[in-house]
Length: 511
Image (cartoon, rainbow, N blue to C red; front, side, top):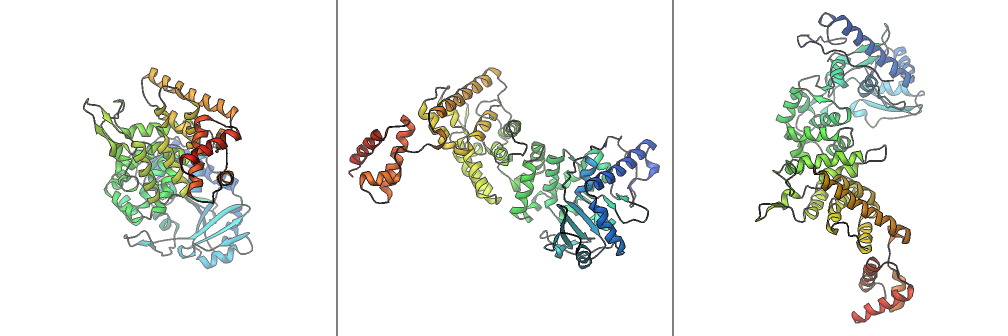
């Protein structure tokens, strides 16, 4: 069910009110008011269709004399028609945490109170995860992002402290007059215009929690929103405040941004506001005058295009974080290796080696898992290997090394290398794609003949020790590497030939 949010924009002269749905009826055309009313009603219907247990929970709170509201992302997503049937639901209530815990006992399948210091009790019922939080009216010390938790008494006060107006809408489930849509900060209007604005001033909001600036860029990527001018201005002025946030929290938001539907827009917002200088400085550093082919305004724009083209090549419904990061970062070594040659051309020799080291250092600083760090930096290191083999003359040995060095990243490497072709010269682009077609064909041919994805020497370590009468140690490893190099160069050997080569090597080594 996708809800229509395409009504005309409200005139700039319209003045917000502080309760109900924030724009007074006198400020809207009649048809606009009706569309707002329909959208609110549809949101209620959609939410309760997906989560009928919300009514069950509301009845328990109503009977105990408490108020209960659906809030946050579930209300937003219901209006956007993107609420999943198994969506987690967030509630706000005037009940204090101990009272919430008592009301959930015997109703929820399980509950937990790890967030009770912040007024949150979690629970699961019918496979749906719920979080019920007591109204908050926090104050922040503005040196860290840790609030001094204070409970509030009104939903309006609770919504004021939220990050963006599109997340500051609520549906009261316990009203005696039926379900009531609460929108004191024009969230519905902002949702219709796909604009991110803050309930309080953005300066106040970002001073309380600088992570909200990065979250704004994440929503730009995930939801296709733009940021209000005053939000962009505050992000630019306060970009250095993001350093108050832990690397783990920054990484979580950045990963959501990268795996969003429009990550380029999110990255551009980070760069344009200066936030990227503090969370991913290697990306804005790529804004060079030109690249080595004199084809692009800068390497930064080229990298954004490569990322978009890599996304187009994704085959799974799930976004590929590793591929997207590798595409974005594949050329970050260029600024450090940039040289002006005597003929006036620009070179970036060994930028893939430097870039792989820089990638590893940055992802470590952002506390990415080791597997992600290893895979992304490996792809950055290998992304130029294809161009080192000439104009498509792929020997069997070259193919074996390419496949072995890529290992399980081979399919991602294919996508990255093909995406790295952003030239507007159609003839050159076609030649590069044909050359890579040739490589993939050679890989396919050799796979039919050999176990290409698991190349090993023709003798294992135990056989090497037995034949040469060696004990475990460095010499065994050297012999193994020698046989592996032969396997790469010649392909499979018979057992007799492998033994002969091993003995020849041992003689040369004086064994």
